[in-house]
Amino acid sequence: AKKTIRYLSGLWEVCIDEKWTDSNPWKGVLNHVRDEAPQTRQIVPEGVWRTVKALPVRNQALFWIIAYSGMRIQEALGLRGKDLDWKTGLIHIASHQKRGLGNGIKNTNSIRSIPIDTRLKRWAEVLKTNDELVFPEFLSAAGNWNTPSFWQQRLKCSPHKLRHELATQLREKDVNEQTISDLLGHSVKMITGQYGKTTREAMSKALAQLKWPEEETDD
Image (tube, rainbow, N blue to C red; front, side):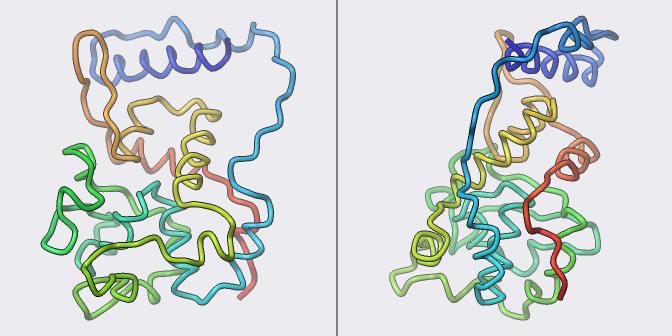
């Protein structure tokens, strides 16, 4: 029941943002709904967070850029230096010669800009490059972007599970579905069709709510 109420509340918040209405009838309803029996959920294995710290620094940077943006693995691997705009605080996911529409960019919703979460700035020097690609070491000789082996061999976790955990966290924080979809590069439709894009401010606020175990460590 709570999941449905959060979803409906999120839809109404989008309607308010689009100025289709000025009130949300679902706001506050959760306060009157009994808590459901606690359920154990573990999308990302618990040991991942400590294992990440033992990885080579560039592998760590790849992990955290996905954790704080919700990008697909192919989207992250195909990033170019100019796609990480530290001045404007945006990550641009775009189609290009080495990562086209058929190689990691699933649809037009995937071509997007995501705010750079402040916690990613600690990785700025690792991610900055004079080369075209940020992660050229992961491009195969055949020109394919393959998931680096450390995900399964060391972390025992897939990048997709990390995206799933991000989406689940945001839903539990009552972030509306449009914002989550715009971050992940999905599409959300209503009976009347697709509704407007989320603001940069809304996406930044959503990302700021993410909490990852072991994320704050001493250098």
